[in-house]
Structures are given as structure tokens and as C-alpha cells.
Image 1 (cartoon, helix red, strand yellow):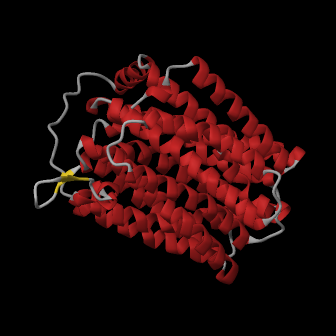
Image 2 (spheres, one colour; image 1 turned 90 degrees about the vertical axis):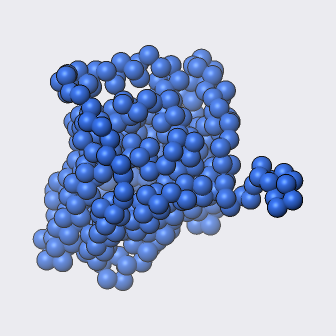
Image 3 (cartoon, rainbow, N blue to C red; image 1 turned 180 degrees about the vertical axis):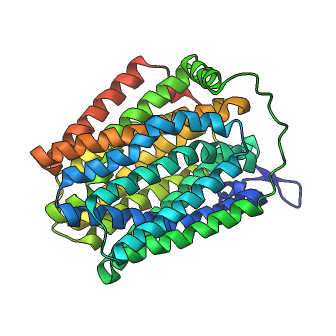
Length: 416
């Protein structure tokens, strides 16, 4: 509620609640730079997946690429969280974003020269995964440097809206560009797009924090973060739920190029529109959460998303009409962003600042580390049983676990 010019109370306008975080200069810079960069990243992701399928004709190889991208998560993510608590998070991100830009340009050169091979895509996936492993903890923890604590849930929701705006448009544009001029231009445009986030990071005015005394080794610091998470039942439960939804639900995205061709009898453009349909739903959920402002029923929305997502994916597996497939992917995208966004928000709220980088590294390991396992599993199932049975099996597994979690675990639905 706010006062009007006559001193009477009235409801705060919805728009002012939706975009609370944008009143902060640093966050505005972040939002614009990251949005531009993400458009390019989604174009590249769409092109990379379809290029792999064109070269190999194998849904299982799509799983191998997802698996290769995830290996660095297991190897480096936890240590990257320790680094994020030791050096300025902005500096860490400048290094990772520059590395990804150079790899995108390398990928474009390989395609333009006709030298690209499936094994090179595996190596590139590993390289991008390594950069992301060091980027994710710093990126999640950086939010606290951009907005005050009371606006953090809104900033995380707007981050999600930004991510899914780019995911809604980038894949469709990437699919069209792929069909018209080939994948090399998708990689090249992505390389250029990194300049926007690099420029935004350099222009931010973040007060220098007092140097933290370093009386312990990195391994001791890491155990401190792991110990904190192990003693927090709500954080443990959220991460367990996130792991299952990511591994047995979100891993479906690995199969989208094969689904577009084998199930819907389409092409690269169809693949891009499938990704965009899911992303538009996710964008709608992110804006919905942001419009709630500083609300107090995050646990209920988290429970809703955890159950709705696998149910929608089971129905999707039986659809063969493009319009209905897009519609149910829209609903699945809406549901899953409730899980991802609110899990992030709750964990960030419960994390003390001096441990934030390490806790968000554990969170990121749970999120990103489960995806390559899920990609490998669903790719193998699809190769042997077909794409629809693979999606049904994974979705039923996620649904069963979520039911057990919310019945026997901490009262997540009661979290405010």
C-alpha cells in the first residue's frame, strides 16, 4: 500500500512491484547486458543441438554432449564457490564471460571453414561447461551486490524473466538463422553478444568490501559451506527436490532436436519454436512471481510447480499436433520456473553473506550437475525405447519423488 496526494492509502501499482529491482543502477546495467548476452547464448545453444543431430542422427549423442558439458560442474563448481567468497565476484565473471566469448568465436571459425566434427563439439561443450562452472556461483552471489536484501526475490524473478525472454526469442531466431545461413552465424553473433555483459560489468559501481581474513585453506572453507547446508533441513530438502526435477524433468530439453524431427516431423525451425514455447511459459511465470512483490507464500508456489511440471510433461509425450505440443510446453515452462526461481530465492534468503558463494556453488552443482546425468539417461532411454517413453518414465519418476518429498520431508509448502 502507498499514500496518495490526499493522504489516503491505496494499492501499490502492479508495475512498480514487478520491476522493483530496476530502480537500482547496478541492477539496470546487469539486466541490459545480460539480456543481450543471453539472446546470443540461446541462439548458439539451439544451433549446437541441431548441428550435433545433423552430424550424427543420434539422440544418444545429444546426451553425450549434455554429459560433456556437465563434467566440469562436478569437477570445479564447489571450488568455484570458494573462489567467489575469496575474490570480487565481478572479476570472476569478467574472466568467465571473456572465455565464453572466445570459445564462441572459435566455434564459428570451425563451422565457417567446414572443419567442425562431433568430437570437437564434445570438447567445446566441455569448455563452455568449465566456464559456466566458475561463472554460476559468482553470478548467483552477485545479486546481493546489486540490490538490497528486501528486493532480492524480485531481482531473482527478474533475472528469470530476463533469461526466459531471451530463451523465448533466441531459439526461434537461432532456428531461422540456422535454416537460412547456417549455424556458424549463430555462434558468431553469440560471440559478439558477450561484449554487452562485459561492458555492463566494467561500468558497475560496487563498493569494495573489506578483505576477509584467510586463516584457513580452500578445503576447510569448502567443508564450512557443506557443513552449513547439511545442518539446514529446508535447504537440504529444496536441493533434493531441485536435483530430481532437473535430472528427470528438465533433461528433456536435450531431446528437443530429435523430438522436432522424429516425433513432430519438423526441422531446425520446429526445434527452435519448441524451445521458445517452453521459454515463453517460463517468462510468464517469472513475471508473475515478480508482480507479487514482497510476498510470503513461496513454499506453496514451489509445491505447485514441483507437481504440475511432470504431469504436464506426461501429457506432452502423447501429443503429435504442433499447436498442442507448444501449448503444453508453455505450461511445463511456467511450472518449472516456479521450482527454479523459488528454490533460488529461498536458498539465497537463508544463506549468510560470508558463505553465499559456497552455498550457491552447492546449489549450482545440484542444479547443473544433475542435468548431464539426466541428459545421459534420457538420451540412452530414447535411443532404446523411443523419445516418448523416455519422457514418460522420467516424468513419472519425478512425480513420485516429489510426492514423497512433500509428504515425508520438511514442510516446504509452509515456507514464506
